[in-house]
Amino acid sequence: MKGYMLIGGKKVFKHEEIEIFFPYDGSLIGTIPRGKEEDVKLAVEAAKVGFEKMKKMTAYERYQCLQKAARILSSRAPEFAELLTLEVGKTIKESMGEVGRAVNTITLAAEEAKRVLGEEVPFDAAPGIKNKVGFYRRVPIGLIGCITPFNFPLNLTCHKVAPALAAGNSVIIKPSENTSLTVIKLAEVLIEAGFPPEAVNVVTGYGEEAGDALVRNSDVRMITFTGSVETGKIIMSRGGLKKYAMELGSNAGVYIDEDQEEKLTAIAEKVARGGFALAGQVCISVQRVFVHEKLFEQFVEEITKFTKTLKVGDPRKEETDVGPVIDKNAADRIMEWIEEAVALGGQVVCGGRRLSDTLIEPTIVTNVPEKAKLFSKEVFGPVILVNRVSGLEEGIKQVNNSPYGLQAGIFTNNIKAAFKFVEEVECGGIMVNEIPTFRVDQMPYGGVKESGIGREGPHFAIEEMTEIKTICFDLN
Image (cartoon, rainbow, N blue to C red; front, side):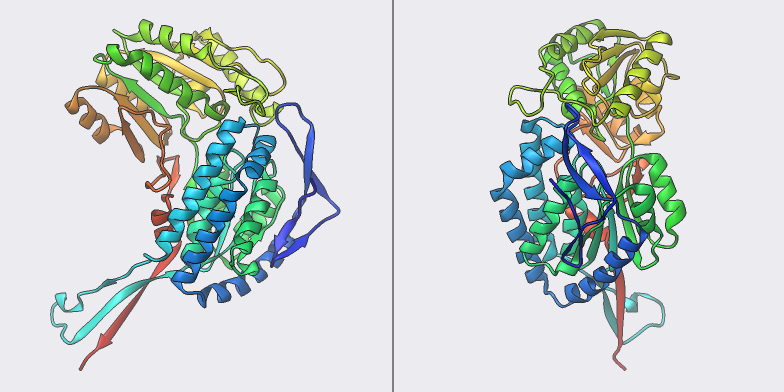
């Protein structure tokens, strides 16, 4: 499959290409152009034209286009799912799930297009002010650069692009070089649905080339990015005076209280599914589990028993539960982190073997020390650590013992314990009697500390992607 860039509605090919490989077996599935700064400049100029055209569209027209895009995507679900599996390596079940979520995300954004609201400002509430009335409106920010990750190239692109278009902006998308073919197809769907071709641009290539040029361009008024903390910091240091929405790293923690013995089997299954979905390559994958010491041995037994039932292998097969990680380099790093944790005193109680260049068994490691990378950093692989804690206080302390703060979870029957956890854990989202991997697309989603800035979810993304314009009338 030969990919291309979409600039102003035109397909752009280049002599220099990047190859995209199926993570499971390394077979070539397609190529994309290696975009450079000159391509970004062309896309920006096109997006300026697109923004002028977007300004002339009514809220209802934007709503209609997004609704049509959702219908087109839904009708082509098997095609998109197959491509997702080939590019990302996620199982076909996970790919169909992502397509369904993307349809929902676009639909939510369509509804929000009709609800970009302002509010009256009570000018006479200030001393000495009379006969002045006014209000503020939310207006589109302009050109938005969307830098999207490899793990959910369809739905996470929709989370950036659909709200941007709903609010009346134009976009330049720089997808991950691993998973660009899906994003190109999505952009074509949006144009087919009726958006101006100049308003939806895709520049493929490497982050340090195309991505950097997009970030540095002063006509781009906002960058919305999902990826690593390190890259997020580089973007903010280079982008200058513009708005940013950053959804960065995590090593999500969950605490299991002493009163959960009767539910432990179900909790163990839920935790394992949350840690091993997409081979652990989810920003809110369960990575760190802190279990009350009274239940520790039983929980380890339960999660080990369930994990051993998971089928690892070819993601194209319906029966596969866990597929490969994105590439060999990622697998090398994950195995190094497991080995380091063991060298520091951790014990592998399940999995731990590498089955191929990119296939790693779902792995449970217990008693992992705080100084191990598996504890302190984001593994982004099929590995869950399980440590014992003395109780709620230590559970909260260990969940907070992280540079990240995206989402966390607690399992407890104690309402006071739940509220204490909610109040004291430093995260953007707290899930009570649920794993931190839980997300619905309409909720405000984002983190604190090094997990990012701003919130996604169409309603909340539109707030990020608009400016407030204040209007005042003097009635004298």
